[in-house]
Length: 390
Image (cartoon, rainbow, N blue to C red):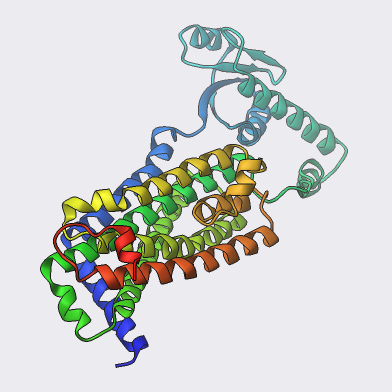
């Protein structure tokens, strides 16, 4: 059997075995539920819609003002509900009873029990100005279509010199990307280590190594779980972003969504680096109870990279962010932040990719050596120095 065929079979086995596990299904469902809640609830809780004001209308001359104000209100983030009132005394009583928020009298006077909210007054003033302009233009003989064109000129096309998306949107995308990458790198790295220990404890690895080489087994395991992790990551992002956009919780341009896709490309790079190390850590022990001690230093490195990425979000142009974006163990979490915020460049990104790739190749060779020499040794944990010694 060729090495490629063996790697493919091992990868398929890892995917199938993991998908069949109830813990994987439950964790995926729970994660999707949390992401869905985070995407939808803010829009429902804070999404009572624009403030709605009841405005009394006294006299026929007030009708055009009220109608124009209803249209203008959308520019100020409010809604206006006109209500006909027979006379001014009745309108004043409705204001005192808090049945109305404001009253337009004769198309020229605005009444309120106290100072009306700024956005309501601005909308009513805009409505009065528009209604007055319509009246003047109609008296000059303009048609309804000509009046509408005169009062509704095309808006200016907005262009900015900065990268697309506001600073808040950039920070949100960066934070979401870092959090997802951190969770996936840590989760699937530990799964690789736990899978190695499980195979050692159950002696399954002895059967597998009778048919294929240790390096092939390691490669298949890392590739299989990596593909599964990437698929789960894409599913979470698709569900979260889709629900957030559909519910109105998140409003981003297509360029920002494309940025999310670019960020996700850093998962395979970081995963290949850390998964190889976690596999070697798993090969050093024979019991799940001992895994924490052997994988602990790696977990601390991932956590440290996560903390550095937060600093990069606050100051993506700072010296720490620039250095960390080129260090192989922190670059998978920091480089995406600099790219999203517009501080990173194509040259720095390519340099980071090259550094990670070279480091990964070296680590894979070392990890494969450790795995090959320690995976069949059961009993007490194998010391790293002993596994590396020829």
